[in-house]
Length: 132
Image 1 (spheres, helix red, strand yellow):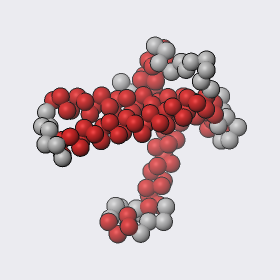
Image 2 (cartoon, one colour):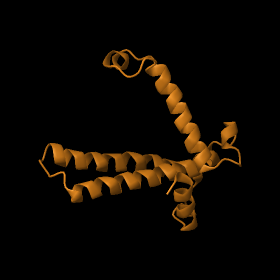
Image 3 (spheres, rainbow, N blue to C red):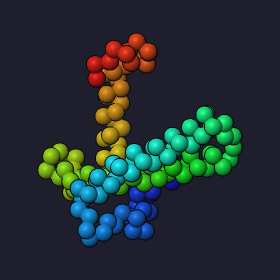
């Protein structure tokens, strides 16, 4: 399943339908808080394996993958509402913006940032002395 298929399926099943009480901005806040909490839950799985000596077994793998899936859902929700919240702030957020276009734009911007930060490739020195 690719990104477009995932977001289309979520939309068709009504997974992005916020309640009438939630504005687009509130849905964006929910998405951003959700990203952090799901990342924390994934990290908790690592904590249990590393510090509590839980096994790296199928159950922990599934738990980790499920948390990453939840993280993707919140990311996809953010992509749904960002164009609505920032409609007049960037040409990308016009009415023709799709979650996949926004996702691709984010990836391109991130590559530009990483290229500026690590023009010679990653190194500990470049990480310690980064300007971007």
